[in-house]
Image (tube, rainbow, N blue to C red; front, side, top):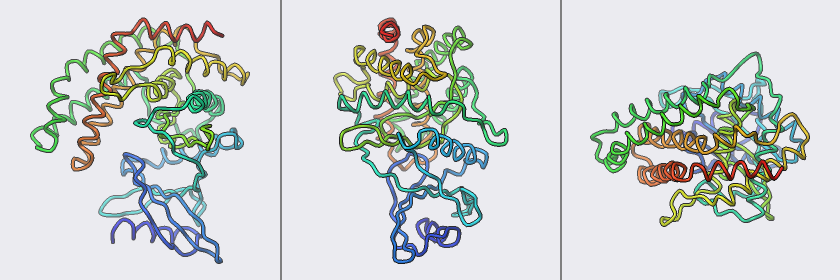
Length: 371
């Protein structure tokens, strides 16, 4: 039985959707496998989004993610939407099933209606989309605020300082295990040459986070907020935020650094990894304005957050490089050149932050002064 047949079998046995008419694989997503099923029941057709989680996913992580989605949808109340997870016949929001020798979790969601106009690669946002992306980041943090883990389940996510060590050790491990494989040679050689540079970036980040970490506000963060995980309407306003697998409580500035650099960093080969400092200040100012207008428990960016902002961008880039190298390790026959060329950009972003450290801090400070 191939995976598509297995997915159809799960839908037929575990959900009350009627007959599966068709199943197509979605190419979005880098770790999970996603499908769209068309089902017919009582002469009515409905589309459903099915996710096969990677087999390292735990039940507690699934419970946490799905509980957060329910909380966020209730708080946002349709102003920005996220997927709705659909319970199965037993009332659970997941199915745990074996395929190809591995146990995986599966979940079904309603189909989101919107446009995936932009992505982390196609990040040339219109002015309207740029403003809406920043506003939506602030709205996400505001509506996510107050979420309490169900039954005391807390994601096992260390602080950023400790994660930096973990990420670097994982990068070393992954590189060592792809060494000597011909299809990975270009990738391996590049990152083997730049491993010392990466280590210096890690040590620099750890030192600076050590100075500021206790002073940095925390909230529920998305962990992968970027234009790829947003849907837009015809007028370029954000209508949906999705992909909540990395949601957890951590320092807020890490999340803002993630979405800001994914929105602003250039893919142009003559300006690879560079960001407009003026637009960076504008992005943060819009975030601050939206937070103020919410009049909620979160404040605009603090001075400490502005000081640590370039370090936060570097830390995000280290995490992304770690992820790209892990994709080569786990699926060496898939998208090697994509991850190779993409990973180079994130080293360029680190160097841009090194070279423009004080200027990035000033842009962040200026966004505070405007409020």
